[in-house]
Image (cartoon, one colour):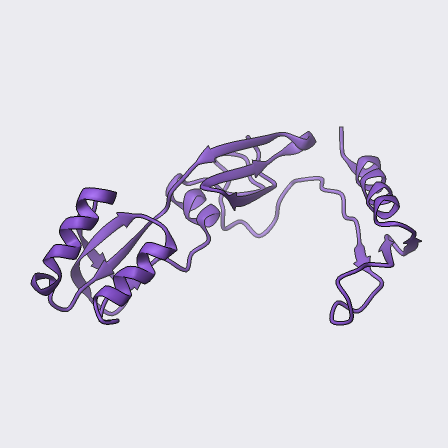
Length: 175
């Protein structure tokens, strides 16, 4: 599948491709952490191993290599590890977007055909550009009174504006 965009929602990655094609993949990204004194936190480590399948690993950073752990769990679990360790745990890879982690782990590049060089500076792709803007300053209200689609101002009810936006997108989808 040629991937145009990706997002993470509810424990699943969703990829969008050409022609509105969409695919979901279950994914729980793992993160790494190290502890200054693992023996002090043996009970926590045993509980994490039992519940999440904690595994020992070598954590390599640009500064050093340390013995640590890998765990496929949520950000909330990482917060609890920090709290339980008295904030001495060093946590790695938690700040990476799940969709970017997945693409990197599987050697996939968005907007590229498998085998394309992901560092290439030019793409031979025909994508349609559409300019979309909101007429109202975002800091004033959460309600929108108008949108701008390729320089054309559209106003009305929210339903009318969404319909106009959908029509504009439909007009530009390549066949």
